[in-house]
Image (cartoon, rainbow over all chains, first blue to last red; front, top):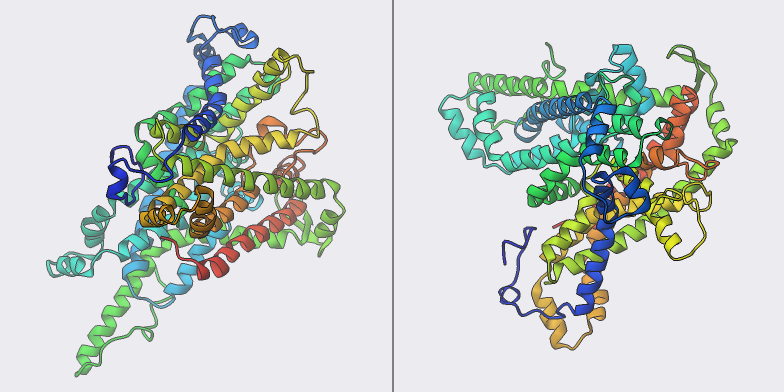
Length: 288
Length: 318
């Protein structure tokens, strides 16, 4: 029973014994499953199309043979290997810098006393309100000033300092008992050593949650990368997919479907394997 | 590496100490702590200043200047860009579309999210599979989602058209018709977001005290009455929280437009951020684009401030 509950929460003993008030009727079950099938239909259709010859999908020929040909076509028709590499490098770079910078900043806010800390924290929180996604024009100008247009660093720079990560880690660090770091200090540990040996290990679940959210956000991010990149050398998967599937290119539907599944595949598989962690991380990210 | 907090130690509280030496030592320690703090903050703050605060400010300044050449801002024009905006029919179309889009997406996705959460919270057969089915669209990139749906809507070959053909109905170009293009995008957005909002409702439902339900059953309340009078009021903080997020998303998430319609036909499906993209990066009219950005920032900041000052004062999450 508990294995099936995928969110943290109390369940009454009565409920787990199988007695349930307002128990779901067969009508509920039917409606819930109808909605679920409707919900999966577009995705199932895309999967079916991607694995069948192109002429089968346009006729909806259910007896058509299964094939991997579309994936091969897609892979050969556009530099998807390069796009994959770009996206993986981009996501890893952003995550690493975000974790490092926000750990340092969050520790300062949570544990050190200094003049101006409130003002500095307010400055950080402004980013939760004015997201980098909106400031496209000004950030583009900055990037061209820095010569960072069409580079991976250019895509990542506006996201390196994450107010959300700083906020999340600050809350977590504040919940760690001070006795622990006093004990470490008595042992002669420096501030950075305490941060690294005491705080970071204790905040590991929060790091995991943030990492999942950050990776899925930047894997899926589109508008800013579209604007700031203009060559295969720096384009991430989402932009590559958009270029590949734009109407003018005249690529067949089944190939586009294959490319679409290919680009979302890693995340989708990760989600199916680690559903619980994904859902909990997304929830934590929402409830700041 | 100097820091603004170096020269001062006034704000630091310390217990009254007997000797001057001890006080001096305490002051030195406080000063050291302040230096450490600013050093730790420095990298994050510099990046935030460079890529959030400065661009926000420079956008405001740019919006008061004409578009210059080569990335430089032109001469001061005062509110001319804003006057241009007021006279721009496409801008108003985008505003209307965005409001329509928000007004349709938000209640639909939130209503479905609540329904999904209520179902998944019950002990239905295959509950884990249901949850997965509802949540899966959340994980997909918006561009991929748009691609999948594009095929769905396509004239002649699309699944929708094949179904209509099978039923003997006339063909319809869903994305090519100004009266249905935006509705198509709305549907995609609802599909993508309902499962995401579901998890917040689900989490809230699971924290409700089960004895409430028992009491309602003993009192003979109907299930609908229980939902309306007990669950719904208790879920109010969650509803408001999701509402704020949904409003922000309605103005921020426009990736679908790039794939499905490109704002067309005839600007029938242009949203504000997409219009900003066109003005800024297709027509390269930086001054005007800055003015549109200011409008968007004001809208999003207003929503965030509403959440911060009104909602957070009234409700406590968890």
